[in-house]
Length: 459
Image (tube, rainbow, N blue to C red; front, side):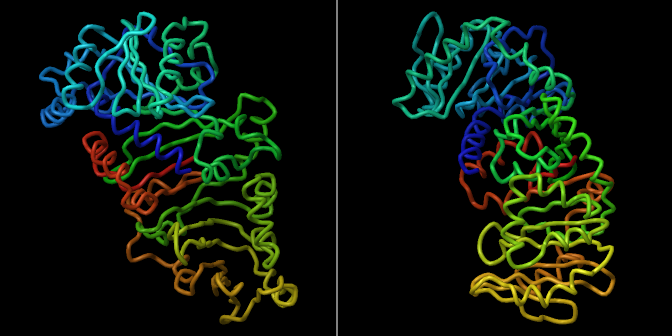
């Protein structure tokens, strides 16, 4: 996960300032440089984010950052979308339309005076520079391609790769592929189509729920549209699909299992929590879908060695939430809460106590409530008088899973969750902490999106 995050933030830090003043494009030949084996593709249209133009404050900010007096002097065609991609071998790239090759050459020469990049060199009729000794930029009269991150010893090899991409025609480029066709059908300012295999590992499991057992992550696709969701958060509306008809049929059929979220637990998640997931399901149907998912199957197998989570899940009928308070320390274990149709699984607790693995035990906590421990970790769980399942790594966390948090999510986010079929909440500060690259990227994104604290992904 850290590998993907580090690459992405480094690219954002350099690329996003150039996106604030984009509008519409008259030619898309520059897209031919994007390799057909891309496993993730992103398009950014700054014009839709800012109507037709940036504010004077934004323009001043961009001019200072790009070291130009006139935004049209950098040689990039600001009327065209910018595309980001990831290749099968893990390289990240970004493509701009070139308006004037000489102006672009002069802009890079000016940037070299500020230490942003090296002096321009030539190779096979194309021009090259390295940015911060980490990214390689190659350009022609048609396209600017930036790729990386790379070590200094890899720069020559990446230049060769960029030459190959810059020489591609339409039949060799991305425009003839299904992934581009899908991306082109999306209409938001920022759109993404990616293989599940290109996503951070911890997100693959939740985002591929519903795929048939044994389906490879490279066969499952995520398409998403990103927009401003409100003050302090981004709204990402996504769908899971596959170009494989058999896998796609399973995905679409299993979507029916996810009913509209009522919002029972939206108030229970704190804005300080790291991650949250909200759904509404009938547990008897949901358990079969979970067992077909490799990530959840492994998780359930571990938990079922002491507690029969399968039976607990089968008892669910209504809203359900899984919240991870923190990604480190004692609170990293999830809080799970759900509306129940019955509490029959409580009759089996005595059997669970007797069959606990060596070194583990289950003890009474209070009425209809217990806790499991292996001597290091604790998991408290129980059923409330109004038929809600609650759980957590401490008694406080368990109670909080069904109570209104004193630092609940904003009303805008809560309203955005209600009515959706599946939602994920990502608290950026809790996930990234004081990461230097993250903070720098957030500062650059503020003129575009405002002060981003939370991401809401909904299906």
